[in-house]
Amino acid sequence: MRLLFSLILFLSAQAIYAQGVRIGGNPGTPDPSAILDVHDTTKGFLPPRLTTSQRNSIQNPADGLIVFNTTTNCLQMSTSGIWFDIRCQCTYLPNPSFSGSNQGTTNQAISFTPAVNLGLSYSWTFQSGSPSSSNSASPSVTWTQTGSFNVVLVVTDANGCVDSSTQQVTISNQAPQSCWHIKQNNPNATSGMYLLDPDGQGGASADQFYCDMTTSGGGWTLIVLTNGNVSGHPNVGLSAAKNTLISTNGGQVSANLDAFDQWTGTNFWNQLGSQGQMLWKVGSASGSILDIVRNNFNIYSNGDRVSFSAYQALQGGIPNIDYNNNGYLQAAGSSTGGSSCTIESSPSVGLHGPWFYHSCSNVSPWCTGHSDCSGLPVRMQWRNQSNYTTATSPSCSNHGEIYVR
Image (tube, rainbow, N blue to C red):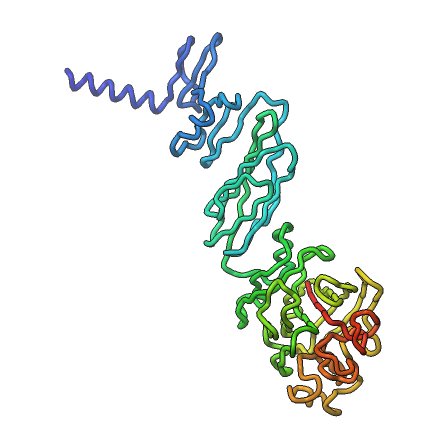
């Protein structure tokens, strides 16, 4: 008899579990879509009432868990460990959206900015990021591992109204190709040193480059740097001038643009400047730029030749670059070492720094004792201005920078 009674209870429980339960003042058959159907015409459903602190103490809240937050007077539901407001005593909710790159590279910071940055408080959570959380209006975050991670922003206005949003960022080991790619993925990126890999999975390893993230929209990669206060220059022959990722003199590449000379192989210029734009800056020092010119460029013929077009003066009075007569880079009608272009490939001849060729002309950003610079130390040849230096040959600037994007 006891066995029969137990069996009846078991079967009844299974039927209730399978069909759902209806409770309230008018019991009956529950709705087939509900496991629990609460029915009443005189009373309501009262969920658990918790303060924010009490709610946060719930361990591993299940998705769909509902509480009434007595601190914010909001009905809230948990999703992926984040509490979202269902309804509050607010006429409107603050805007929780934010901008920032949705992809990045390990150990490279990504900046995030909320759509509204006035009158709100912010609570950021960065899954596996460093830092893992922040209350800053525009935090910068670094990930040391690859994968896809959630970035959550919870905003609160002066009335205590709360809303949140979540975006996902994907982190990979592959360094970005150029400063332009960094700027596109992270509009808040600032000028400074970045790890770049121009040829991706090619033979050249990633290296540190200086990025100008402000001039004319930013995203410029430094490829050539000359300084009159640095003795010597990158002394490379034609092959290295085309194929070496970075050659320096005076020191390592750094954010101090007055401390070294730099040359990047011409075969990387199109890769670093995928938009085909070049930026020239000249002056007495990095903090005293007199002229900034933007133009289009293209490197061709296996890195030997360059074409310029569409010049625009962004600062100063030089409107264009003319290759033969008024070029910013020194240009000669024939190769310095003789009538054959191939002679210039020897680092022992003439301007034995990097150059590239066009119709048996050499173009070098370093004039080392050549007559055009009247024996001055290493300078960049800028023919149209007379106020770059107080020395005897005013057409040679003391400081020159060339960027691409």
